[in-house]
Image 1 (cartoon, rainbow, N blue to C red):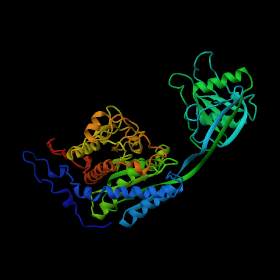
Image 2: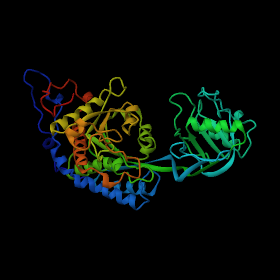
Image 3: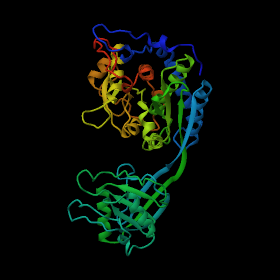
Image 4: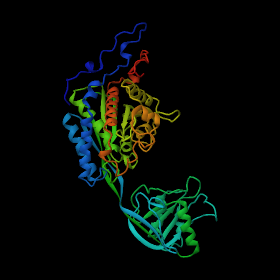
Length: 505
């Protein structure tokens, strides 16, 4: 890293050596870091430039940057190629994951009696990690229990190998949801010689709609689809009336692949006080993933670059993380956290997450712990830092629940690490108040095309990206200079709440 261009003292400013009317030492006062130089350096043009580079990578690689694909590997190379020459200590952390892709739409048909084409996405869906194949055969129900004229009770259909006693090899198995995993049901069916599997929803209220299931791990080689209870009950009724011939077609890849997390750490800083900032680097399959999440990637990447270029050497160690396989269930961040000892986790004083920060009809949202949601109390500190920042620059903002399942911050919250972050909205609807305060269109989604091929660079809102990138840079800077509470032997002196950039105890 370029060093000694900007000293800690010149960035943070002097901390008062005495507080009138109290004997609290000045060392206990929380500094109020001035992030303006960094925010000026992190320009929206530069951030968007990284997004354009990632878009070019997607264009050159079948329109996607999903983990386990060449587009993701090229994205990793892009990040490393920019940060390694600046002196960051780079760790490329490999891990295996279950890769899955549908190469063409699946099909489900009743050939006889009464031929019918069921509708993909309405009547049925391919189960994630389904095998590939084209099976036309008799449909055979496996331990299905549907009381006449009623929804089902809890089902154990397909959970035991004995359920398949008398099953005719080559037939398509009709199995009901319930009790055990879809993987167990499909494994038992394949072992019994089924050529395909149809798993339908169980039937109780809340368990009757279209079944979008996952088999979790690769290994099933035959087609497996999920249906609504209504479709399953219809097919079951057909089997009770006589022979029913169906066709199940899937065209998939289901296999274990390797992907990577990228970690870039400052050589300077207290290794016992680590501040982390992260964004997932992968897209979903068949998408360039511009808002989700080239936007967050680009913001923290440019922040890391400019901190090095400005020679900023904060007292805390900074660790930037670019996660793999977030779109498959936060797999990269979960893997990373699983490799840390409790002592290593304790050294991470804050994790900030930036995911979807350039929504076309976006609005500034700050991740906010909810009452009794079990998140670490210190996570509220990140919320206050971002709220104070937006107040200081006159931008509106609303809370967004700090839901652990929402993005990679969840992996840290689950491990007891304080976390926060920013978000500019997805499929939710912008309110009249938000549109009046910030602009955009009330009554329309913030961005309804994330996680789809429509998440393209032409839909990036540069004004939202500019505001959120500045906020991200400020939050990262703040915690880079923050004195951890446990390192302050006495509470910080009270600071007027009239100061919009007030200290956070």
